[in-house]
Amino acid sequence: VFPGSVDAAGRPATLGVLGGGQLGRMFVHAAQRLGYFTAVLEPDAQSPAGLVSHHHIQTDYDDPTGLAQLAELCQAITTEFENVPAQALQTLANTRPVAPGAAVVGIAQDRIEEKAHFVACADASGVTCAPYAVIQTPAQLQAVLDERTDLLPGILKTARLGYDGKGQVRVRTAEDLAAAWVELGGVACVLEKMLPLTAECSVLVGRGWDGQVVSFAPQRNVHVEGILAVTHAYEGNMPPALATRARDAAVAIAQQLGYVGVLCVEFFVVADGSAHGGLVVNEMAPRPHNSGHYTLDACDASQFDLQVHAMAGLPLPQPRQHSPAIMLNLLGEVWFDASGQRREPDWSAVLRLPGTHLHLYGKLDARAGRKMGHLTITGPDVAGVKAVARQAADLLG
Ligand code: ADP
Ligand code: MG
Image 1 (cartoon, rainbow, N blue to C red):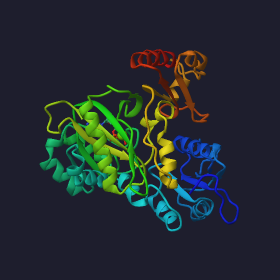
Image 2: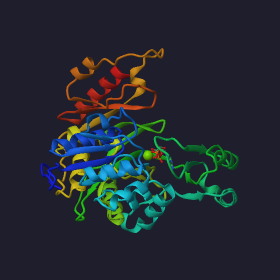
Image 3: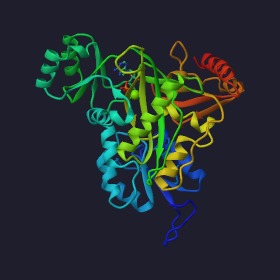
Image 4: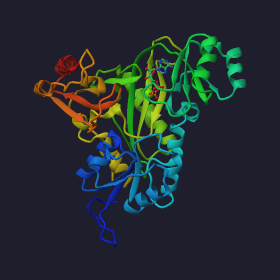
């Protein structure tokens, strides 16, 4: 699908996305920069992506009429939200190229299938996941209580619909575990052993329909209360040998999936001397990822550019990072002062700092934990970027 081309009916080349969040918004920006028209399917009237797209189809993700409209308008379709029903992608794929496909999105949506995939490609990727057990039934819970106390202390995670640390309970004892499963509603879960993390990182991979693969260097991520807070993206952000292993592993995982589009693979770095060789694969997101937002300002092609190129069948650029970068997530808290009063952050002071790039997602309703925007700091050297990031964090704290 070439940008600027028109079909027999005179309609311009249009790319579609299921979901209207900030990832969809930044996808739309990247697609439009290349000359594409865009269509967003999203029920919310005021969504970040819907507000900036040429077309906004305002229906539920699985609404047959909405999906038919999207297919009618678009030459290729992607998703920005991993909990979009895989069935909706399958329906669209009957008539249009859809990337990533329903099958791989279905795997990434379910921690049980996701972990099974990581185990299945451990030989090719050179990494495995944390020790875990599947708990779907009271009998499986009992078996884990009886036989898998090696997984305690651990984290019980719902197999589906978890994000930003939601749908997880930390458990120390067998009693905790039994109570946590009830607390999570007795749904399908995995119990994962709690590992001694020294760091977390993620790798973004882009893969085309023809199997061409490109990737970014791993970025190191700091989470606070289960939500990404800071991403460090510069040489030396982690030991080089681990960075190479993580990048190779992510590429192998994408290849084994036959993946098309942008995939983010998250890893744990664990204390030396563990049985995991220092690197453990955690989870994957079948889309661009919060930890890759720095690529918009610090690289000559962003994760969203790769998504556009991959889905449209254009050659993928191998991105080159031209500046060290730190990204600070801007959560709803930033819009409130210490006494809980709503405030407008001092953007003038922030933007006066050298190398700051502010991205706001057009969300008017600031709530605690809500991703409102992000601030990327770039500069000629790592020390300077760190110093500005500290100043910016102080201003926003
Ligand atoms: P989410 O889908 O919410 O991102 P994750 O599985 O990535 O769920 O867990 C969120 C965070 O919880 C991780 O980034 C990490 O900080 C912590 N965490 C998750 N699993 C483990 C584990 N097995 N050991 C130690 N920390 C963990
Ligand atoms: Mg995660």
